[in-house]
View 1 (cartoon, helix red, strand yellow):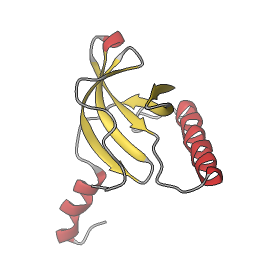
View 2 (cartoon, helix red, strand yellow):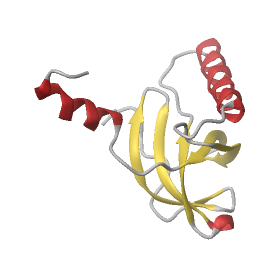
View 3 (cartoon, rainbow, N blue to C red):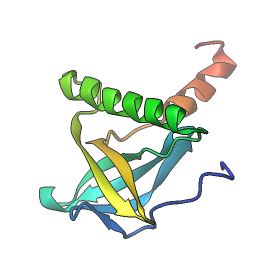
View 4 (cartoon, helix red, strand yellow):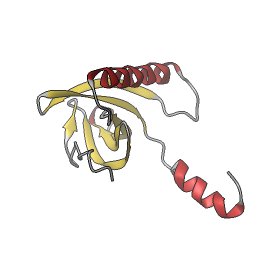
Length: 125
């Protein structure tokens, strides 16, 4: 767990008036990823990617935000059965600042890391 990346959203919290946080799926240098229910789509599962980069300085933060928004734009244009569908990009206000969130379809299955670890003993990558 990243010591400087505090947990932002607790289980049960509703964001954007429609996404209920179920649990954290993972975290990295740009934030956390959560499994959520879309209350406007019959509690369908989805993924919320929180933008919380671990960068220093205004310029670095601005560049990271630009890259996050670019990712959202690229995902919006991609249409492929093996790429989770982009749903929306929105912002929530908390602790006197805005937090950007990207919403995608949830795809059930193994993580990429688990797949790699399972193949490693076989010499596959």
